[in-house]
Length: 520
Image (cartoon, rainbow, N blue to C red; front, side, top):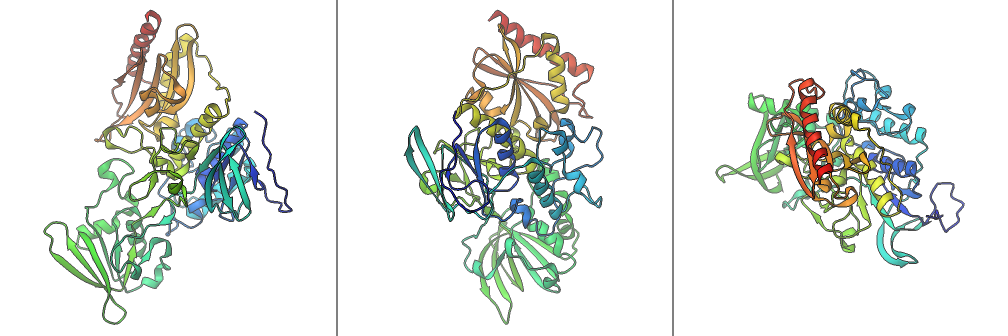
């Protein structure tokens, strides 16, 4: 494919002047940076534009109290530059060059294995600088339309700098637009995004709308300042230690809940918020109705903070036909993160959680976090390269005698499988003529449904999964004659998936599907 160049000239020394490109990526947070890096490594010409003045996305501002929930272990049982180390580093982006891998631990000050917000922002900026990832900053995307081009439809992205045309548009703009509930008087509150410095709440009664992670983060940071904290939403609190997943309030923010349970001055109420009104003096009156019995509870407070989260800043994409769902207005997506209603529009980064996958045992993927979205971005870039631009896929052969060791090695160490459990899978095709071949990482939902890049040939898909009890175990999916069957492997209490017992079970499963492929 001939490389398309930008059509307009400008004195601006920023990269990617307005014009036509095969792909346009919008954003400069982790998702945009990772997908842009992957596209460049594959050799797909593209432009990257961002409204921000520098890399980092939401990490340029949040979390408010400056400490992440995602960990990086500087000292782990594997080498820092190895692929296996990615299991212990949730915050670095992925690079092919050893010197650009695992940048986060080298930027941390040693005070915590949860990086600070400035460390995370510096991590992303360092990755951009070292890998030579180019981004046109201060170039906000303002509108979108479609038009016919010489070889098909084009998306036209409008910006103050000019128009960008592309066959494929990838939006990695985060779930970053403040959500405002329709509660009467909500304008008297302020959103998480506009919270004042913590010390300005000293001695005040603070009412927090919401009982999610953001509400408990604020409550944790305000514990030493506020005279009283009240957290209210209709549903009970969910703790991540109870859900055994990243769903719910994380352990680092449980202190306010413990104070509530032990009578320490924090109130956590299951109630709907009916109205916020002006009270006497500078006070505010919040009218609530308890979920249990419908009784009214009226509270007089000094501040109301809306901690009900953010929505996707999709500009005019819904008017273009992009369907959305849920409170966060996530776009409906295929397993490969393409709009389910407008082909050619893809989503990367946090927005990728709109492609839910199989959600086995009700557990979601980690696509809303860096350690999940970075793998999605790499798979997405390869998918676009294959399906839109006809780039060939590397399919390394696996020697027959190495098939079982390869499966065991992936189950034991593959970070894609560990971070995106029951969501991403390593696929090995078993064509009798070609022999086993590594087909790479694919979305498990695409493999199970037999759609997308993975085809319908006899093959194995390797995953790591977890059930509702928190038990983690490998599962092999066997595709034979178009049918998919599961083979669960017994869990190991120390999560060692290369033991003799597991080796024997894997060998048995591999021989079962390989024999069927040969005789079929």
